[in-house]
Length: 182
Image (cartoon, rainbow, N blue to C red; front, side, top):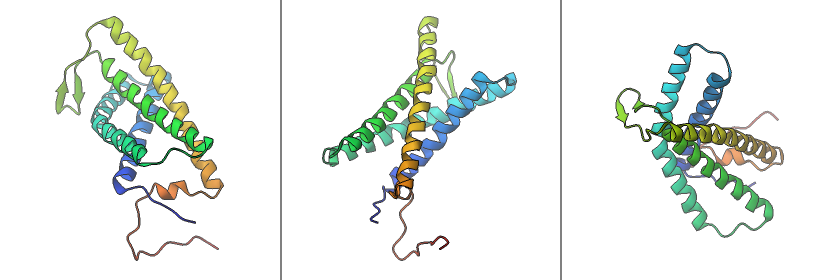
C-alpha cells in the first residue's frame, strides 16, 4: 500500500502539540476535579501556563502549515474527506480558543518558567471570569474532538489505512523496514 509521509516539521509539530495538549488537558482537569494539595495545584498550574505560553508560537506555525496544505490541495472529493477536513479545522479552531482564553483568564502576570514575565492582559474581574468559563468549556469541547480524532485514527488503522505510519518521521532511503512477526 502506498504511504505518503508528512514532512518532518509537520510530524514534529504534531507530536509536540499532542504532548503539550494532552498533558495540559489531563493535568488541568485532574487538579480541577480531584482533590490535590495546594502545592500540586500551584505546580501544575504554573507548568501548564509556561508550557502553553511557549506552545502558542508553535501552534501558530502549525496552523500556518495546515492552511498552506489546504491551499495546495484540490477540494475534498467525498463527503467523508470533507467531514475529516471539517473535524481537523474544528480542532485547530478550538485549540486557538483554548489558548486565547487561557491567556485572557490570567489573574496576574504570566510567568514562563520564571524566566519571562508577560503582563496580565485583562484587569476587569468580569471579563477574566468570562474568559475562565470560556476556557473550561473549550477545553471540554477539545477533549471530545481529540477523542473523535483518536477514534478515527483507530478506525483507519483497523481498516488497513496506515495513518499513524504517515505521521512518523520519513525513513532515509536505504533504511531497512522492520518486519513484524509472521
